[in-house]
Image (cartoon, rainbow, N blue to C red; front, side, top):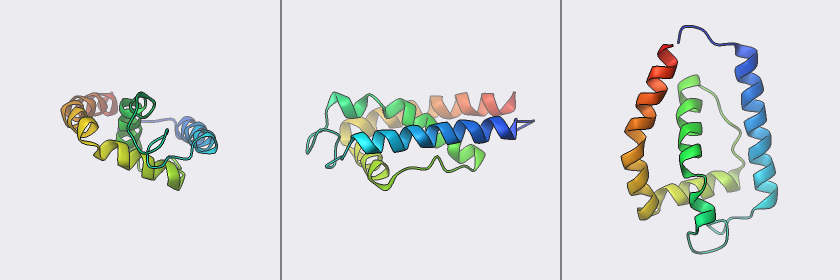
Length: 103
């Protein structure tokens, strides 16, 4: 990483954390957003959360996952239908992140 605005990164992670807390206040996954079965509501966030995990890890940041949402995210990512898509998508996401970090 050549240079990043630390204040902007911190502010961005604070906004993400606030959004995750807001989502946690609206949802009580069991284990999925609408109950026992995976639905479109769960899969709508899969790619976005993949990028959140990758960027957070690369920057050494914790996005502030509320425990219930972390468990939900893990359950969705482990579902066979989702896991196969993530396995396919992850290399492209990692390449994108590598290019962004090299800028």
